[in-house]
Length: 175
Image (cartoon, rainbow, N blue to C red; front, side):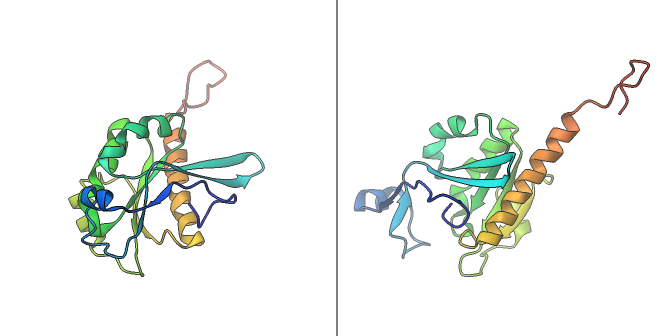
């Protein structure tokens, strides 16, 4: 959120306490000192007629209770995957597939590294073939922009395929 929002994002980062450390597995992220505890919010203006409101939630299944509210009216979603903690990512992918919301999956490259091949990630998270799976760096504005453009492309493609064809002068709908 911080690398792309044109406003100072509203964030809900909190210091990881001993209690939280017992809930979240920090084995693969020993230097992590904060965690998102609710929802982050940011804004991007695409053009004068299109403003995107960005909502970020934790991806762990225990935060699933807020996902329905966040996706209400959403154009699409971007599921951000940390390959160091694939087990924590399955619930979010599964959620979007079952809600039939256009989405893409972005593997976050920490320090320019991805722990697993994209085909392995697709298999491990059971991501269906039509769902775009990309690598990005959440800290780089251009990389986040490109990931969001993938989501917009998926949403636009879905909207276009749902549109009925034009009606001819004889009243017959054409593809």
